[in-house]
Image (tube, rainbow, N blue to C red):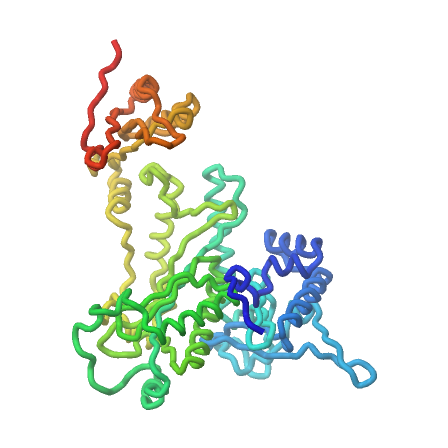
Length: 512
């Protein structure tokens, strides 16, 4: 059967997401699941059984025969133990069963997984527990249930458990700070990540001839590449047909799994490429990146290629990074790292920024240890990669704001700069009393300059410029509050005038 070419239909088709849950699970159980997530409480067995029944039906309809608790132990790869849905019934027949108990918890043998010396081998019982914040999905004919992996005594044996605990700690402290600013609506703050994935593609036949690549993931011998080839025709260059076919296939497979694969392009080094997703919640983003790396390799094999994910597979050219675009978002839809229109006066933003900088400074050893391993250290300091030094670049304006706070100087006095607002006045839209009052309230008490411009009168447009008396009225209101204001001449009816419009300013004389 031919697959659909409708991307919205394809996206998430192999994921038991919220939409699928609403279709296969009773509304009361879905509501209870949402409540458990919001209040950070465990599911009751009754609710788990209802979700498991719906999940099983969905999985069977999508061709799954087995289920597995899918987790990330400390050995750097994902782990799976597959069990079929079959269960015997009298008469030598079978039925397909999957209960809430099997959904929520498993009891694998943890003796073969690294544990940091937490227990002796004979005490190696481990528990895998469903992480309901990350959706189940189908991979290779098995229903994969994202889970945490803990020891008998509750010690983390995986990478997801510390992540979930840290996300909860961040949320708790962030909400506490928001309460100090009078925010009573936010109940949860979630770290959000978009993890870019760089990779190399090489021909499988050539790969098979390189023992160093096969055993170590990177070159250990051979001639160095010619100099100066990195930026000649590759970075953002036209994608070759064979690679384009691979990328198209990769996108489709990732979309099925709910991965928001957005951008694809050639990277700097020859045969190097990148896939960049749209950001999502940190926990889901990490699970999806594990899937992404696995899918990249499988799809490459179908195309007679090998996907190299080593940080520095080839000496002398750029290595592959995994840039993380990170932020904090509230359950009310706010970005806590958004500076707003006036960063220097946005106390909430500045506090979160300062907390971030202080956290990086205080816990730099911990941050460094998370990426300090042989492959990445081999990449750092070579070609495009910075050295193994943690630094923060805020940008010129933010640095000036921080410096003004540290030096206890007014931002405008220290920098000699002030914000300027361009206010295009539209009749009946933003020249009413409430709109003008809002502008005055917004600007009052700040060192800013307001430029008032009548909207260009364009033939056929329903929007018309405000009459000059309204513009002058707004100017008087602003200046009465101590806000310097200029009325600019609207001269955009011809292209020559429009190009120089912002240079042609004059002040309208006040009415006697």
